[in-house]
Image (cartoon, rainbow, N blue to C red; front, side, top):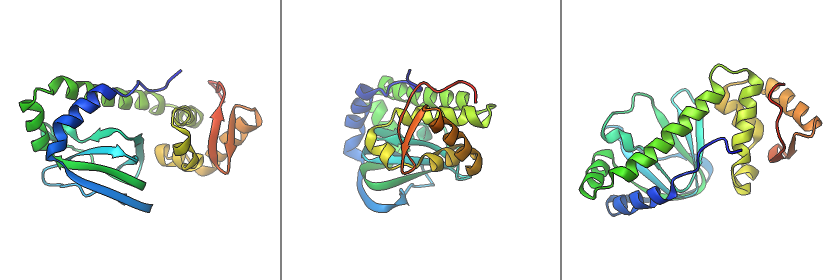
Length: 208
């Protein structure tokens, strides 16, 4: 059973067609993570066409990992963001960015509000479900939710993401506790790992 709702690809491509003529293109290729250049005075809408984006809160908690295609920052043209979010990329990533004010103007002039609403509704639901599985739960339940989300990634992303680091950065759970949980799950045959990366999972027990 999928942990998160399916990404609305049709609405993404409608929005991308609406916004692309105003965007400033970028291509980032590095073995290290790099911050995207975001205009803090206005707020930028960032459209990711290829690659993977990591979203970090201002306190360095990993808020999510998103694979292209992806759009970030649409609400900033209406309501300014009160929580700092840093977008980071690994390896190769391409796309474009434009000011949030310009994005809202383009959406309005091209009557793309329905597609924007659908995209934002999807983002909101993902955050809602993520909070549902993390806030107020014990270390095992949080780790279980993170493992289930990783199981939905494609094989390439899983092969480049360490399980322990991902859970630790997403939840703040100590590495020693995570290591104990992972060891028990591997011993029980619930997960398969190789070199610290997740290969696959079976039905995870609800309780540890």
